[in-house]
Each structure stands twice: as C-alpha cells, then as structure tokens.
Length: 361
Image 1 (cartoon, one colour):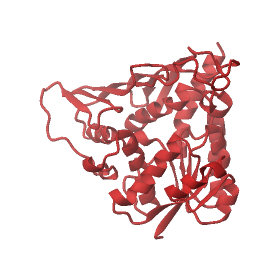
Image 2 (cartoon, helix red, strand yellow):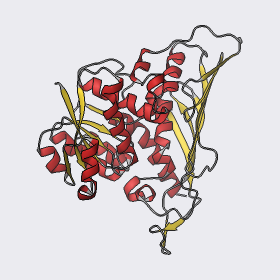
Image 3 (tube, one colour):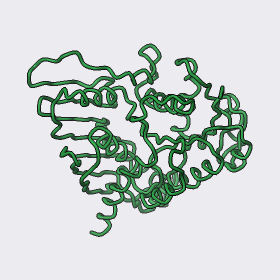
Image 4 (cartoon, helix red, strand yellow):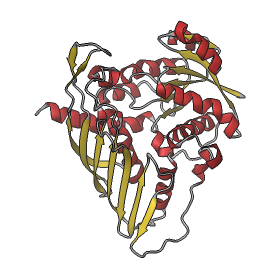
C-alpha cells in the first residue's frame, strides 16, 4: 500500500481538524504510506465543491454509499452528529474501509452495544479519544507506570468550556437529545472518563448529577421562537476504579472565563498536575522534594516537534491520526494507546447510567 485514501464525512470544525492533520502529515513526518484526501461527503456538495477541490479532494458528494462504492478510499473519517455514526460505521464495514470515528461512538450506549455486534473482532478501527495522545497525558502515563508518585490515591478532573452560556445561542444538533444523546456529559464527559480509565483501569462505579442551566433557546439564529432544551450543560461525577483510585469529574459548557481541562492526580509519594488546555508537560510535586530523571515515552514521536507545532489541540488530533495511519501500514507500536469503539462503550454506559438516574428523579 503506497497510498491511504480517506473519505471524510462532514465539513464542520472537527472534520477540518482531521483534514489539516492529514494534509500536513507528510510534511512533518516520514510516513510508510501517503494519506490522501480522496472524497468529501457533505450535505452541501455544490456549495463546497470549489473549496474541497482547493483542499485536494478528488470527489465531492452528498451520498456516502456512492462514495464508498467507488472503491477509491481505504479509510473513512466520520465527523458527523453522534446519531449518524452507527449507520456510517456499518456502511464502512460492509465496504471494508478502516474506520476512524469521532467520539462518542453513537448517541447512546444501547446503540453502541448494538453496533459493536456488527464490527468484526480485529477490524481496523480507532475512536477519536485524542487526549490519550496529548503530550502531557503521554508523559503522565509514563510517570505513573514508573511509580514516580507511588500508589495513586485519587484523581480529580475539571473540564470546563464556555460556549453555551449565551442563552441566545440557537439550537444545534449538539443540543438535541435525539442527535447527541446528552450535553456536556456526553460531549466532553466522555474524554474525562476515558482518560481516568486509560490511566487507572476499569471503573468499580460512577455516579453523578446533571443540570440544564439554560433550559430554552431560539430555534434558529435571530428567531423569536423558543424551544426547550433536554440535554445538560453541566455535570458532576464521583467514581472509584477497580484498583481503588477515587475522585471527581466536573464538566461544563457554560464556564465563561474558566476554560480548562485540569487533571490533579495524588499519589502516596506526590502529585501530578496539568491543564490540557495549556500545558504540554505536567508538573510533578514530590514529598521528597526531589525528582529523578523523568521518563519520556517514545510515543511522543507521534506528535509534531516543537518547531512544527500547530497548537496542542491540533497536535493531539495530528498524533492520533498519525498513529491510525501507521497502524494501517502495519506498524504495531503503541497499540495499548489506540482507543477503540469498545473503549467508547466502556465509558458511554456509565454516562447513560447517570442520565437515566436523573430522569428517574
């Protein structure tokens, strides 16, 4: 395989993030195969055709079945609303395309569980839990594996975003329970819960509460017509892992002025602290007051180097897609990092448990 042709489904901000990563990848890294932007699938093919061709796409269509039937792509990047993922993943499987899917897997754990039955064991796939590839997370995981802070006692995560505080922001698919499955807890909570599981193992329990602080919004920009919002904009969770790590998670989409993705890990010998919005390296605090040479995981090479950085958010997407491309070329390094659809289900079921517990009250 000399080329890895991609069909990109969607043209929103995340789809463009994927495009930037794939277009710049051969410039920044030496690759065993060349990623190629082959086909764009969008609801607006006529409007976007010229721009898509400027980006480098060979073909633009609104029909995913048509795109995959051509057989010119070997991989698919799914960047559509959550409720559309299941059908698109199944279509990719039926056409034997490697799957790179945005998170969460679907709009509900029930739908994800059903989908997993239709994806063969060992099928080439990756879920976009991109914070696993964040440089501070790669380092944190290596430090934990070395036991630098001793036995981990607790971990607190605070993932604060602010874009939905404005009550005049109109309804979109992310505010639709049928399309997204949930609000902050589904959109960004999955990242937080996945990182805890990735770093510390399976959950013993997760409990939580959600709340909608902005319960009504315009149906469209500039419209006086209002509609009820049925998804949360804030959630808090407590958890314990099977290995006894305890902690809290708070997620918000209304934290104006307080945007952060802060991780505080406390161990018997010290702590590791970082803000994934700003830090590329975590800070280490030891009771002994000293630190030995800290390990640097070789997986760091998945990221652009310091002179090629595009910002930590884009870099993390770059590293995740870089790993995906390498894996399709047969490079089996760092398989313990690569997130799967099953990893998505492992946290989605806890999120659905919390959402269901709120609806019973």
